[in-house]
Image 1: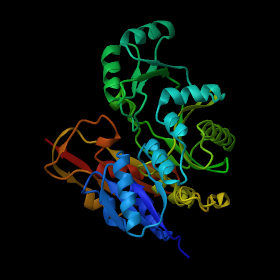
Image 2: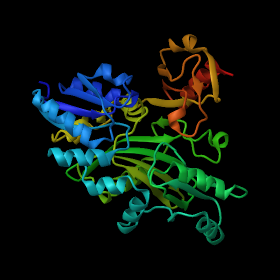
Image 3: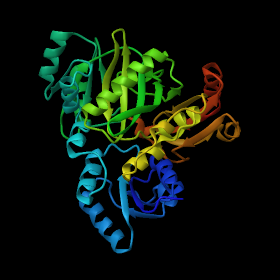
Image 4: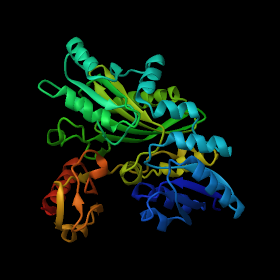
Length: 407
């Protein structure tokens, strides 16, 4: 028997389609909003509205209209959009389950987040908020390089730069600061080591981490000094003992943020001294992590669990147990900037049974901008196989087959 009620999904881009489809499969009526009238997710929802996902008064007006038309709103949520502050405001105003305003404030401010982690004994890199390049130069003189500079309020690799010997400190600081909506940056210790993405489901203060993937930074040299992830791997290459340490860390960090019922997305680095928390978001990821990598690799759809928590249901955490162990990877297309003439090789490779997904964002005649974040990537694909060697060979084949011709 399906769930009765209406779920309001903030965002209707590709990042939210999996959530919209999952919610409708549960029997919920879905209303999706987005400021882009051409959003692909609109076609997947029961109803849609062209409204900014950050415009709380306009969203509340929409909710009033929905209720007048007989909708029984049971939850407000999103996937891939870093707006826990909006979710918190709406849920507080509407009396619905959701993150607290305090959690949202911490989760959208990296300085506050690091301070909270430090207070609660969560291992993190050294950090300091800075607002002028002179202080950055002092820190470099005191601590040396490498360091990392990032805006305190952005995601998706926006404005995150590696500071190392010979770099232009002033230029990189200015570029990072320009990405911040509030004009604030963080400088922190650079911790080398394998990086892990996690997603943790929490209910009643108990956390389970079904989302667990190795982050892929093979293109670090291409984009240096900017950090630009190129997809990930499931299953992770960490040992079972290491995984337990990471899982313990991300649950502790989630609780430190005040998330007892909901979902958190963690970025962790494995150092010689064990796992360290880089940062954490109070939301589901975008891209293909919870949509493709984890469901294809483990058989777990924890987006469904997150939806149940968002509408106030008691989830079955025992159901978040893998039913299979398959190797999966996603990778991105990063095209050169310029006018796209054509894309070659897509049709020839698309029919391969091991290629689960291949999406390109641009068409002939479109102008591809320089890549400054994941927002400008030219496309994505997902590959499955029996092991990493087989999957890597298939990744290589896709990259060899698909060519973006740009002028």
